[in-house]
Image 1 (cartoon, rainbow, N blue to C red):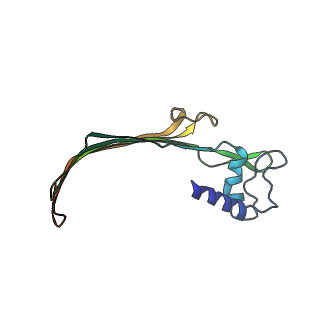
Image 2: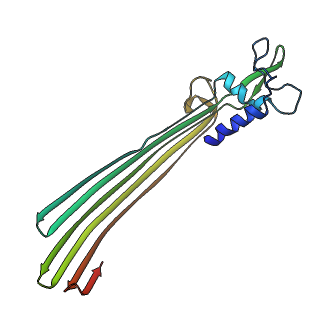
Length: 212
């Protein structure tokens, strides 16, 4: 997330002095210097150097609307529309155990081997249709409108996590050897309604409106 990125830059700027080196002479990664009570960049440089921690987010939005207008007679207009919106979303995060050293020949490890994955799909559909009829008879003006509305919403998400994967390069829930968890959630609802209105005016002075 944006907050995680900002925090990482703070750690790199505040807790990593220019005198700190990312690796030891023997090629192992550095984390603590024993000169203070915090790790170099709070471990962010270690994760970047090791290169096994990964995150990926994919999100798409597709929206489509189709409309039609029909005028079968001079006084009658029929208008209809259909809208469909689809939002698929997926993400995964992988953190690994990272090796580091402060003394030659002694390897320590930082972090937790954890993999989380989630995916969701959000669908929304709307149908609108209405007709308007107008008629003028001398001093009398009449306008009648009737319509139909329908909405449908469906959302589903699934997520899981696992610890201590068999590989630090491959990312999948079934590679976990402990802490495997899976969950899901769904939301579905629909609305349907009718509406109408009658307008009447006499000599453009006296007005009457009925709604339903």
